[in-house]
Length: 354
Ligand code: 5GP
Image 1 (tube, helix red, strand yellow):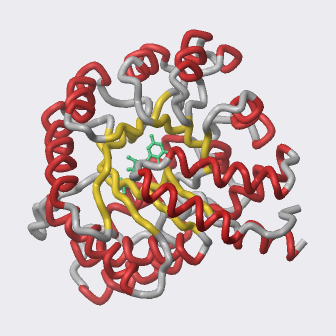
Image 2 (cartoon, rainbow, N blue to C red):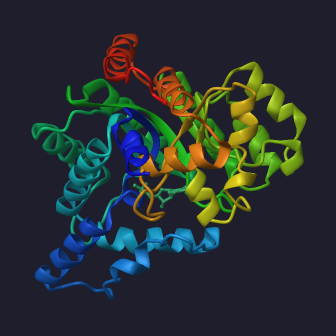
C-alpha cells in the first residue's frame, strides 16, 4: 500500500487547474492567522483554520464553498500575504511531484492598504520567484481569472492586464491566459463574452469554467468561444442535463477538459466519485487532465487525486502514467517546454510502472 502511494508521489505531474487562494495549505493558513494577529489591527474576526478546509468525508453545498473563499480573501488582503501564499503553494506543488503548474488567480485591489490589482499580480510573480529561487524543480505559468460576478469593465481590465503582463512577464513566470471562474449560479455571461472574445483576439489562452451546474444557455455561449480548455464540464452530457450538441462540439474541437474529482464530490456537483464524468471522457479517449482545483479547501493534493482516479476507475500504474504524460500536450506552453517536459517523463519512467 505504501509503495502504491509512493508511486503517485513520484509520478511526474502536470497541474492545469489550481486557484491560488483555494490552494493554501493548513500550515500556511496558520501562518496567515499569526501574521494578522501580529499586525494587531484587523477589522474582521479571524477565521479558524478548520473553517477554510473541508476535511475527508465531509461535503458542503457549492454556495458554502464560495463562502470559504470569502474568508480566505480576508486573510490574504495585502501584498505580503499574497507573496507568502504564492511561494508556499508553488513549493508544495513542487514537493508533491508537480513539474509543470498553471496557477490562476483573480487580481484583487484593497483600498484600505493601497494594494492595486497590478501590485497583487506583482506580488504573485514575486512569490513564484521566491519559490523558484529555492530548489523547487517546477515550471510555473500564470492565468488571470475573471470572476463571473464582475462587470464587463472589470473583465476587460483583467484582459488588458493579462495582455500587458504577457508581454512583460519576468522569465521565471509568464502570464499565458485568462480563466473564467466564480460562483456558477451568478453573473451575466452575455455581458462578459465580449471581454473573453477580446482576450482571444489578444492571443491569450482561454480556460473557462463551463457547465459546472446545469445552465445550458451559459454553456452554449461559452462553448461558442471555442475555449482552449474547459474547467469541470460536469453537465455537458445529455444524461446529466446537458445535450449531445455540446458533447459533439467538445469532441470535434478536441477541447481538453480539466477534471477536479474531489472538488466536485465535496462541492456536491456530482453524487460520488463513481458518478464522475471522468469515466465518459476517459473511455472516449478525449484529452483530459487530473487537477486539484483547490488543494487547500478540498484537502486533497494532486497525488491524492491520481490515486483516487486509479482506485475508482481501476487504472493500472501504466495507464496512470500515460494519463499524466498526456496532460503535457494540454499545457499553455511552447513546444520547446512541452518537449522538455516529455523528456522528464521519459527519464523518470520506471522500467515497469505496474
Ligand atoms: P483566487 O482567484 O482568489 O486565487 O482563488 C479563489 C477564487 O477562485 C474563488 O473566489 C472563485 O472565484 C474561484 N474558484 C475556486 N474554486 C472554484 C470552483 O470550483 N468553481 C468556480 N467556478 N470557481 C472557483
